[in-house]
Amino acid sequence: MVALEEDKVTTRQVDVKLLWRLFSLGLPYLTLIGSAFGMILLGTATTVALPYIQKLAIDDCILEGDLKGLTVMALLFLLVMIFDLGARFLQSYCTQMLGQKVMYDLRRRLFGHLQKLNISFFDRNPVGRIITRVTSDVENLNQLFTQGLVQIFGDIFLIAGIIVAMLMLDPTLTFWTMTVLPVLVVATFLFRRKVRKGFDSIRYHLARINSYLQENITGMKTVQLFLREARNLEIFGEINRDHTRAHERTISYFAVFFPIVEILLAAALALVIFEGGQLIGLGTLSFGTLFAFIRYQDMFFRPVAELAEKYNILQSAMASSERIFKLLDTTPEVRDQPDCPPLREPIERVEFQDVVFGYDPEVPVVKGVCFTVEKGQTLALVGHTGAGKSTVINLLNRFYDVQGGCILVNGKDIRTLDQRSLRAATATVLQDPFIFSRSVAENILLGNRALSDADVRAASELVKAHGFIEKLPQGYDTVLVERGDNLSTGQKQLLAFARAMAFDPDLLILDEATANIDTETEALIQAAITELTRERTSIIIAHRLSTIQSADKIIVLHHGRKIEEGSHNELLALRGLYYRLYELQYKEERIRGGVTRTG
Image 1: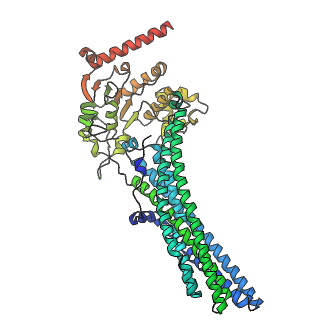
Image 2 (image 1 turned 120 degrees about the vertical axis):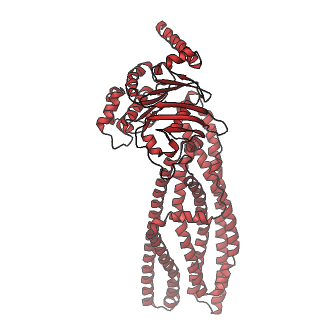
Image 3 (image 1 turned 90 degrees about the horizontal axis):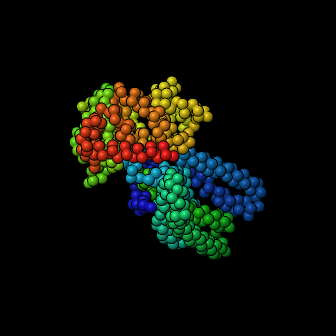
């Protein structure tokens, strides 16, 4: 299991620039933010007013025996309480709506950005890690907007209002209340530091869990075939245990901090009761004032303690936002030049000129490859595994940019052309085509509204896929399971052929598209391939050399270099690598045929 160091964040305090980027997420919803702040101010006023109303009721009504005045005070208390509840409801509604809208926008933005990133990004980053960014980390930002940022200001306003009210009631008792505040500040500071590290650790281990879980679910067949269940469970247990321990450490910090707050509150209350009792005895303090002061004191320590919790939400959101913005700031390695023109004319010619490329620039896998494909020609690429065949196709589709030489389409360097228009003019059928959990028709259309049902049917008939599709329970409306596991390998490949043909591309690319197809299915599509490539520029990566004997040109790659070029007969006459590959496959097929006949 690879340690996901990129999941660890570097921010150790509140970063002002990062905080501004977080706040900017809510700028489109200033009305909601303004409404929430308005309700906070109203709620602060009503909350601070309630104990003072109780003071007046005790001193001016209860102790004086004024029942009429007491009735007025009770009604006033009820009215203020109703306003307080209404303000809290509207504040909660506004902040929750704000959080949901920000989450919606951010997830949409992340998804859109991920689709713009190059294949090299997904080569380096496990799917589970990316899912964590779009789910858990975004949820942390939701907590920031619903429970953190706005509520922090609410707590600050409430604390300020309570301090003003206490000073107006009695400065001496306010002084005794504040004596425990330095200890609380120190405890909060230490708690904040510990919890920040705890949240960092939790997010880091959560990303590891998601990554390992995704990898094992995707590869479940392999896991079960090679009896890896017990070992994988053991590894997952270790990762899960690390995540649990990180939570336990964080819980222990909370378990220590909040009892400390309660002890300090009790100590402050004892001081106020002792001092207040003496002042009442001296006749300098009323009983109602002491009662209101105790209420204010209780109200004062609650937001102070909650500020620490809100700060932890802020810190957790800062950690998540750093990872999210790091993803959003990732720029595609393959980018279009400013104002680059689209490829408007049909592809007439494809040319590789001394192309050099390596996934690791220090280890090239394609070394000075040169070839040309004219309109209507079929070019085949053959060679041992690792010879660079599929890399050539990746470069032509601009999944990666060449590191040396150039690739020309119609005489123009593809790095000067718009990527979308280039890919729109090509169709690639991979050895392992991806099938989405949608209907058969949707898998062929891929959302292209320019294609009709008739186009889908025509493409399917052309590649001999219509027969098996019609036999499915709902025909073209049959919903396929994830990765098309309710289809055979051959059926998935036929579906991929139909998908490619429906788009009627200028350039057809087959990347070992018949490698995993049984002999009977291959016979169904071989005739179609011959017809499809007759009037179309085609590049075929072939494992079975018998499928490319009619190609106009065959390129033999070996360790990333072109070592042979010619037609099938010309290459056999050379008696080089192509001849040896052909002889080897011929012998294998002859042996398989003999075994079949014997059986």
